[in-house]
Length: 413
View (cartoon, rainbow, N blue to C red):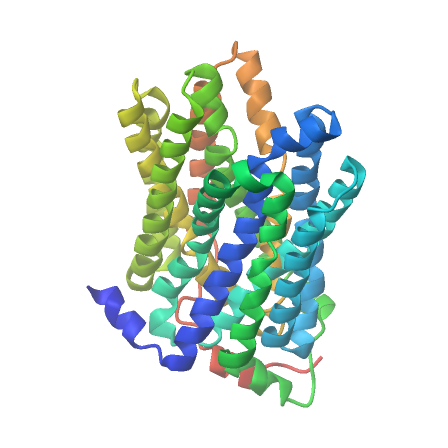
């Protein structure tokens, strides 16, 4: 297959960089999703409602733009590689510390700080990879990198099923310190971005504020696009298990099995559309994936039995995460080159912040329609898929952007 040739175009150093960044995002998502599985256990220990504990998830998501900006600025100043290592150490330490929380307040504060660290990882890892690999390989590499998110979800599911009965929620958070070991791998095998090294050698820099002033329209569009994208993913993930368990009465085992199926679809979709976007363009790949999710949504919510629902969920996540698989390459290519460590992650996480109320909106719609979560899910995906297709289809694209030339031509402030 053609994409295998794109991967073979990577040399040893580039493969190490891709693997490290993929693992960084996978393990970041792993640490995040561990909390999702233990909300009930934490609520029982602290004698509060689950809704009180779920506030920690909201703050984690809300704090991510702060991390994207702070760590991104540091990466544009000091380099992608050292800041990525600091970022991984920080989110691993905060995950570990969460296991020692004496009360809910401390846990919520730690999860908010974890959100800052989580917000920094994606943008830095994506810029490091995209600036390191050949232009012809960006599509499949983008799909691999974004596949780290559902990979982390799957890993958290397996660890929860295997270890929670023995070590409880505190033990799971302590296991979450293991990503810190990734720093040893990064330090030993990963090199700094060649584009950043060339830019660092230039006599003058452009500040983030100056870059934003010169590209304000681009930033606003990118944030709107990522808002639609985050509604696209969260709108098909956050309350789907609730739909299966509460509305359809499926067991946790059946729900978990369907979750495994649709996460496999998510990984395959990201790889497929990421690679395809290298041939047909970023915008076209996103538009096609978004529009194909719409007919698949009927089976996803109206399948009638577990097998058909699982098939629908597989297809929906194949197309939803297929569109997402294009994002790392697309955002880095359209980014102003002098702030590539900051711009993609900040746009992504601001969009995530604006979409953070998705679960509440869907729950309110379901309640309005007499507990019909399936209807709320279906309406959401139909509306948001159109928004993603329109924003992407009429937006910017620089698929063949030369990052080396960008670095040499970085303008002075």
